[in-house]
Structure formats: structure tokens, C-alpha cells
Image (tube, rainbow, N blue to C red; front, side, top):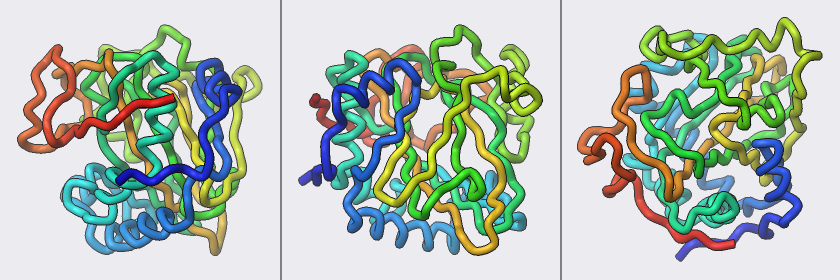
Length: 273
């Protein structure tokens, strides 16, 4: 049984998402599900997955992990039973999709004082896929401000024709596709871009398209953590694209180049406005 969000997204919110590529939706997630994820994150910090050990910078207070739901019961229950799929279904239906699959989950923890930034990037070039009907939902477990590494976005950049190199917090060469453009130096010319960000409370979520440029600074707080869970969702027009310099898929994924995502690693969920 899938739980319901505290409220549905409004038509005005769906219009903002379509036009801006990002939406801050207030107070959608019930507290009990935040507690479930917080439990999972604490275990995740103590015992990251094998991929998490590779991509985190724990000596600098930064945890980054992926595909946790495949091994952790609390992450799995959040994906399968919480309101998160209902929220994603509304977004993908607004993009014209009649079906939806879960792609993966990703944890981000920036401890107080960590200087690790999230470089400006868009997500689609990290992933072995092509398509438009895709969204991410970023859910904080702690109060978020610019000072505690709140995400910032270039409003409307999902409509740009560009495809930029995938820049990770550790600037991994593995992800840098030489055939893609360099990301613009947004920090050097911030006044030339339409930048948006929000202070957030637990229960709020950020919903964004994978082509909208975004990034964040370090956590400047001395006592506030920034724990967040992102979930990624895909619709009808998304196909697997077997190419280098992208996030490795889990073993036994059954994906075939040029075909839709299928199989138990990418479960199907209902779509409804």
C-alpha cells in the first residue's frame, strides 16, 4: 500500500516545474517517512555501499551513496510505500508520460564545516539514458539554507540545447566525457544567470528536471548537518544508452542499448494526475 503525500501538487506548481525546470514544493512528506529515511541514512553513514566508499569523501565530512534501496529495508520501504512515487507520478504525468519506473536513490550528507562543494552540473549526462520524461526529487532531513549547502539552480536551463560534462565533487576523470561541453563558469559571472534557491524545512522537497543546471557550496554551519535523499524517476520516452563516462548500473540489470528500462532493478509505479 502506497502512502499519500500531505497534499497534491497544484496546477500552478506543475506549471512552475515545466517553465523553470525546478520546483520547491512545501510540506509534502509526512514526518514518519522522514524518520524512516533518517534511520537509513545513519546506517548508511556507518556502513556505506561499495560504490559509496568509492565516491564519498568521508575524511572531509561528505557522504555520497547510490542504489541503497537494493540492500536496505528502510530505503526500500521509502521507495515502495512512501508518498514519493505519488509525487513523481504527478510530475511525469504532467510531462505526458503514462507509465513510470524508479531509477535509483542517492544519499548526500554534508557534515557541519565540510568545505566540499557540489560543482555546477546537470544530471542527465551522468546517466546512461536518453529521454525527456525524467525527474529527481531531493528531500532534506534537516533545515537547509545557502549557508548549509542549499542547492542553487539556473532557472530555465533545462531548455538549453547544451550537454555538459558530468562534474563530480571529487572531479573524477571516470565521469568526464571529452565529447561534451565544459560547464559554464557560473561562479565567475553569477549576475549573468537567473539563479534561484530556497531555505527549506523537513517535509519540503525540490523537484527538478535532469537538464537544469544546479550546484551548492560547502556546509558553513558549525552545528547543522545537511542530510538529504534524492530519488530519480523515469517515464515512457526514456531508453537505456550504453555509453562510457556514466554511472555504472547494478550487476544483473538486464538493460539493452536503445530499449526502455525494465527488470526488477527499475520497478514500475502508477502514474496519476
